[in-house]
Picture 1 (cartoon, rainbow, N blue to C red):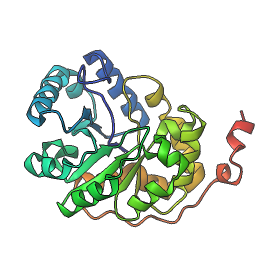
Picture 2 (picture 1 turned 120 degrees about the vertical axis):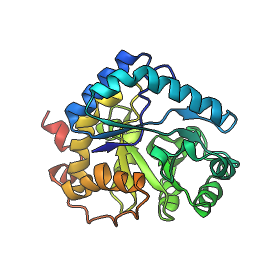
Picture 3 (picture 1 turned 180 degrees about the horizontal axis):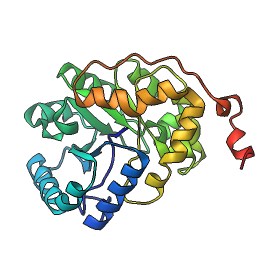
Length: 259
C-alpha cells in the first residue's frame, strides 16, 4: 500500500515534532503493510518554494538515519493551499509535486469553497499537472453539498479520502461524507494525513476495514495501491472497478452492532 498524504518529517509544520516521532510513524506504517509514504507538509503560495524545499531537505537529513533503518520508501511533496496563482507557481517550480511526478496534493480552506476552485484545478490540468484534492470529506462545503467534490472528480481530479474519517475518528459528518463519496465510481485514493504516531495513523486499520465493507477488496486495492502507484509514475489512472460491498454495506450499523 501507498500513503500519499502525511506530515512525517520532524519540525516542518504541525506534524511530527522529532525524528523519534518519524521513526515511530514509519514503524506503524510498516506494520500495517505500507511500502511507500509521501511527506506532504503544508505550503501556501505566499511562501517561497525555495525556502520550503530547503526546510524539507534539512528535515530529510535529520530523519535520514531512521528513514534508512525503515523498510519504507519515503518520497517528498507538499500539501498546497489552492490559490489562483498555483498553476504558474508549479510551472516555475515543480519540486512541490508528489515524488517528482506531475501529481500535486492540494487543499482548500475547511470553512469555504473558493469561487476559483474549479477553474484553478482545470488550469492545473491544462498545464500538465494531476490535481489530488486532499480530504474533501472534511470540508464544510462538501459536507453540505458533496456534488462539489463529485463535479471536480468527474473531470479527472483525484479525491483523497482519509482513513480516520471512514473509521469515524474525526466525527460523524466526515464519516458520512466519505462514505457517500467512496460509494461512487470516482478516482479516489485513501491516505492517513498522519501528523504523528497518534489518532489518524492508529485509525488506519479500522478505516481499511470500513472501506472494504463498502466497496470490496478489488476496489480497495485500487484506492490504496494501484491508483497511488499510477500517480507517482505519471501513468494513466485505472478505471474504477465495480464495487463489491461486504456485510458492512448491507447494514451501515453492522460493525457497531458487532461491538
